[in-house]
Length: 118
Image (cartoon, rainbow, N blue to C red; front, top):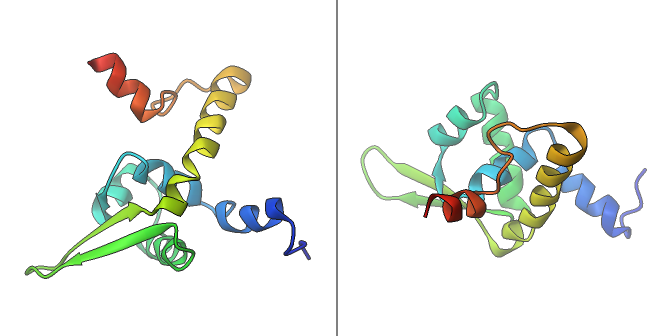
């Protein structure tokens, strides 16, 4: 059993769930609706996405906003606690590019991509 007093163990409990870091990666770009997340995370089932978002919301990493419209509109965004995970994802992006030769669509951080376009 992992040591609950170890900060690495506690962080791993949260971020090591399948799809979790990819959800945070996508929300780092800004607010997103469920269908947008589902589309960007090709292969994730709606049930799994719903469970992961709910777990992240319970951990205080994601904030869910429901708009009183018909049909109801729901948006997800990172909280301050969630945004604190972005440097971990950026480090993974750099590691994957430099050490694993991964040069896919997420090889550039969103901020970097915007700066290049400007």
